[in-house]
Length: 204
Image (cartoon, rainbow, N blue to C red; front, side, top):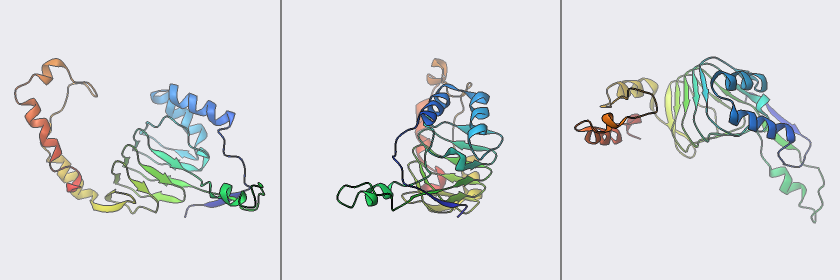
């Protein structure tokens, strides 16, 4: 799609460089994390929130545009390891006949990738897209829509989702990612919270 590459077969172990990158990814927060990822990825735009804690293999093949959220435990698989099995097929010998296949991932503007999603190599995710939780992205994703599933399928348009989200009966909190005791104790609080289970993401 964007690029499909092959390399000589090699041992699939975490190199010292990748281990150090993962440690830095884990400890850096906010703009420091963004600055770090901007150095190691093929492209890293503005207004990106990147929450995964493990550095993907071949981060230099990942390009992220602008206004993107990559939620916790999203996995980028920039290669496959089938060549390991194929190369060991000759009586246990490690003949490096079959190459390792790798590819790029590109994510365009205004994209939210929900937690625990897997993104395989060789795909592009278009503009204005939401990927539902625990999804498998194994193909190019067209712009302006919501997708979910294993593998992903189109659920509704981005416009439909936006309108539905705007009309949801929700309650905000005073401080992001924190709910105070007095907010919890507000009359009818939990009755309203249960309405979050209705009408979410185009009735997925």
